[in-house]
Length: 45
Image (cartoon, rainbow, N blue to C red; front, side, top):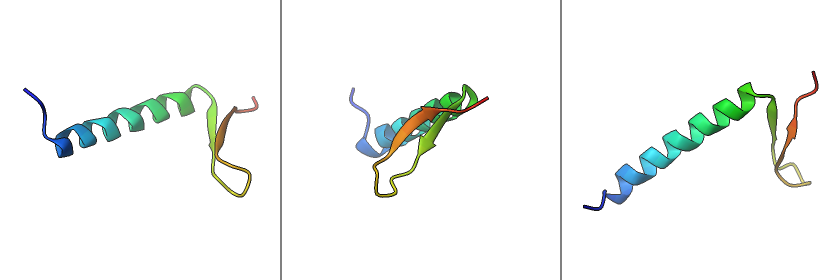
C-alpha cells in the first residue's frame, strides 16, 4: 500500500536532516548559495 504524499515528504525531510547532521559531525561544511553557487567542503582541522 502506498503512503500518502504528505507522510512520505515528512519522512524524506527527516532523513535528509539526519543525513546533513551526520555529515556536519564528520567535518563537512555546507556552503550557502551566495552568488557562486551552493556546495560542500571539508572543515579545516
